[in-house]
Amino acid sequence: MAASFGRRLRKGAASTAVAALALAALTASQAPGAAETRAGGDAKDPASAGDTPIDGGSPYYTDLPPLNSPVRPGGSPGTGGPVVTGPAEAGIPATVLDAYKKAEARVAQTQPGCRLPWQLLAAIGKVESGHARGGAVDAEGTTLQRITGPQLNGKGFAMIADTDGGVFDGDTTHDRAVGPMQFIPSTWSKGGPDGKGWGADGNGDGLKDPNNIYDAALGAGRYLCANGRDLGTQGDLDKAVLGYNPSREYLNTVLSWLAFYRKGTHEVPDGKGLLPVHRGGVSNGQGTKPTPGAGPTPGRTTGPGAGRSGGTTPKPGGNGSGKPGGSKPTTPPTGPSTPGPEPTDPTKPPTTPPTKPPTTPPTKPPTKPTPAPVAALEQVGAKDLTATVGEDFGQIVRVRAKDAAGKPVAGVPVEFRIVGETGARFPGKADHVTVRTGADGTATAPRINAGDKAGGFTVRATAVGRQVPAAEARATVKAKPAPAPKADALARTSDAKLTAKAGTAFAEGAVEIKATYQGKIAAGVAVTATMVTDDPKHPVENDKGPYFAGAEGKDASKGEGKDQGKGKGADEEKQIRSLTLKTGADGLLKLPEIRTDQHAGTFLLRLTTADGAVLTVELTVTP
Image (cartoon, rainbow, N blue to C red; front, top):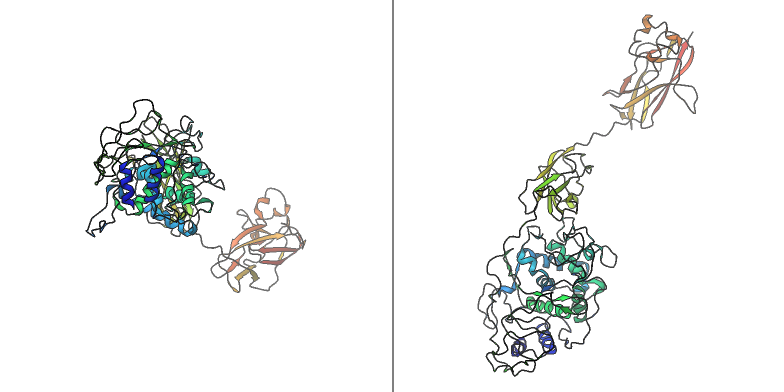
């Protein structure tokens, strides 16, 4: 069936209807209802997802797959003979292919009814960016150089003022489609039914970056599956793709690659993917129009049902034989005609379709993209961080990317990596994260958890793909302090009454207490001893009666404290009536010497702990 329709394409696409029928045959194996006719220039595009198109109607690659089907490694059509790989067009860069398949698996878990095939993501990735420009991505899947579409300034494209401050697309005046799947920033960050955006974290680094193929592929998958779509039905499949770019020509191009990839693909090294060469297909939401100033590519047509690479398009109604090298098409009219795809050379018969991969794409691997002009990373956040085991660091690590003139550079991917033997980690237990600099050139690392190991480590910031010195911050994790000792009971070690004459001192060591917690000795417990008034409801520190000798009043018992009975005055500083001491290893605490002033009577000494233990001791002072 596919070969039959392939001959019809080589014979000449007399109308959009014929091309659409051919495309229907190519996609007949993909899902129920796939053979529905897409003929008719008057047919309206199905409704999109009800959101701004992902790529904002930006140009896309119009290259079509070759007519010869891809062959899975290990066999060839009809012969069973061994082959290593299929056509070059069937090769997908390793990291990009992995991202497509992982996005399919993730969506299958959360939206199993959608039946998203990874080949659809591959088809869109091919059309939007040539699989991230042939797989020019780093080990984490982030593009080595920003991939952006034209400025969406309303001049031939949608009009979308800047929504991201240039963080994703580097443009601070208008948005641009960005990344391997060509999301516009507003759709990535603010689109969707809940206004939280279609952005996703596909590689588990805690970020949602449209310039990362894992994030972009997962975000695209969720967008395609929106509104409860079942991509196993042709109607929902069409709506999903048209929601990405509302153009019938775009839909046909994507579906042709979908059918091609479903028949077999193979993995190629990153950076070695075959780059598409024909770009156009700008959409205004009502149809397509060429990029301003652009015309048809020689030897190729673009638009619905366009012929494959290397072929020519006979004049509609021409007399093709249906065989390679058949009779010449009729001579085209010399007068004005309706604008449309022009044949490359209408005086020659159609050539035999290529049986080998086209030779027009570059044969050399893509050159490494020129990095953004970053000259230095400046540490603008904390340079020394401190936290306790198990807690988050209170300080933030932040750097600024600057060019040679010292001006900030936006959109630079900065990797923050924890270096050293430590249990400290970023959110998600990651030891490294990548953050792009904002419009002010700064990138801020997520807050770090100190982990369960005391010690030191370094947070190193490097500009991904740029040869500039790293910026570093030192971090220290302190051991968690031992829990404070507790005491829920206090008791005197003696029942002897405490008596002293006014102006003298109580016997040395007269007051000794024992602290316990749940019946066990409580060592190192803080005990506060206060001379208080006798008000049982609101005892406050007393201003007369017994006191603890100050540093200059130790020898009151020897007769050197005769003037202390004056109360307030020069010696008042020596009369300490409240102090805090700690119990020893045996849970015992012996209070320092207690002296008396000239006041006689019964006084109260109150001892308390932070855990609520209270002991009140009577002190009797005789005249």
